[in-house]
Image (tube, rainbow, N blue to C red; front, side, top):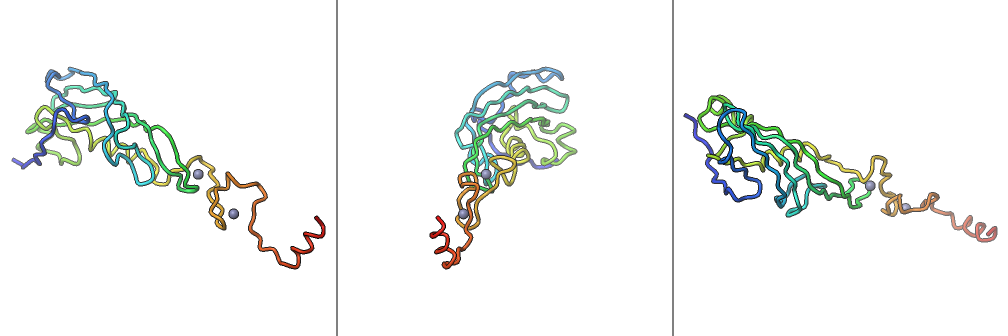
Length: 184
Ligand SMILES: [Zn+2]
Ligand SMILES: [Zn+2]
């Protein structure tokens, strides 16, 4: 028998699902609809859900022969920084969860690795690792404020969006500058 990592889950922790009122007969279902505070660092370096922001869980727990299947949606606010112009991005994270959590000592538990299939910890399910994986997959490593963001002027570092169309840093020859003054 394999050793299991025994992290002790707190049933009252926001991203821990308690299956005690879910009958273990295959096909039994329970809805989990709740709003919980987002954990720290949910997302990537440039974009993510701020810690403590409202995460909406709309999930279904279904008993299957080997464990509990959790499916549904998690959504929450996203805050990030445009990788081109560095301005703030405000968006919404919407991810789908579809994960089997195997009962301890079920055939699935004995024949799969923990990184392939989730594990029940007693009657509890830790949703956090699944949610983190889903968020990381859904988020862009280089977020943009919009698809065609023109970025920053390399000369002055101002966002092109805020600069006039004829903005340029052409070094003006001082002799021509004088001429320009005359013709003005
Ligand atoms: Zn941008
Ligand atoms: Zn410039």
